[in-house]
Image (tube, rainbow, N blue to C red):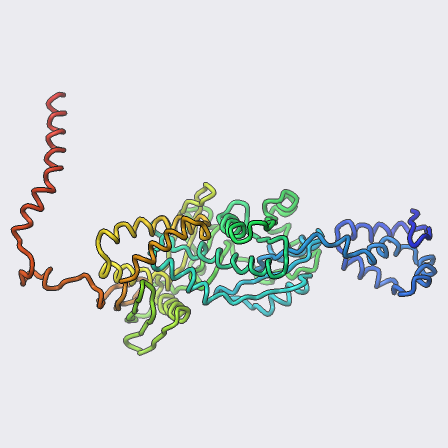
Length: 485
């Protein structure tokens, strides 16, 4: 038995109930503690009645003290959590709440297949005081994907940066919400080994320098407690968190309207072939239609402004509609699948499988119209800028001064990238059929083998001799070296 003083009255506590409620309080589980008390006793509002009642129901003393002081005890600050409604972030939401934080759950709709209303209800049931579900699809395409199209952005020659581009888009709105709500903290569910923790947090600090970041998968108390999915499942069941009822695929997946990525699990062995049922965004090229779709893509300033299906007459002319339609056509024909090992910024290699149907079609079309309209030496410089753009985006530096500079240079290079490209999409491939532009640098008369035009073939002799000077001198030096030996 223990003595506790409350309202200047001293009472003896029932040890069993005191242990139960005290444990809940120490874990900062206010609502379960309150529910426990309400199931045994109704708190009176009158102070004198309360004192009299407490003499009969002494076990409530510990909780009563918390009940009247909950704001002071519970409030550790407000956290805006990037919430996916999956097992990890659902457990993180409850775990943060138990530690006294007020949680604002934030979900970004960037084109993934998700029941957002169900996710809202789930977050609210887990204790989020507010839930934001933000439709970012249009700004994701216009502000992030289209600059990547202008840059011909490809990381390490193959990866089209679908996840890398999505993270700064998600982070930007998360910080807007944090500022609007006066939140001191932001949090995410990215692991401590991957690139996403870097991408999110560099964006957070760039946009909100004073923000505090809670990264549970880098907190020893969290990652030592949750060593795998089994620990998360046990925690979820204990805390009333709905768990998946369907078997989990033996790999992880991240989806948005630009791509789907797959990694970990059975894919961690780079020798293992991807299962045939892995792909969700594209058909197996072997099962694709036996006739192609012919598209005409129109560009202005290096971005698509219209797509027309030549055979069907279907036309789309907003950035989001264009991209979604290209995904549809590319997915139908199995375009945009890659299986690669890449170099993470954090210093390790990882195996990833990606589906990027619409992005692959746009890359091929843009490369063609750009070469058709851009000066050779400008394009050579721009190619280097595109590689730098890709590395900066992959590494999480979207909001850096260097990427801002690179983007301005690339945008300048795109001023004359205008015209139409016709292409065929068929059995996993994109075939360029033709192109036209009012700003083309292609001179049919100048290049023709049948018309001399404004070009004297004799000039080529001097051009060749001048370029041969360097080669002759190199050979002379090699000959001198050989003679000395």
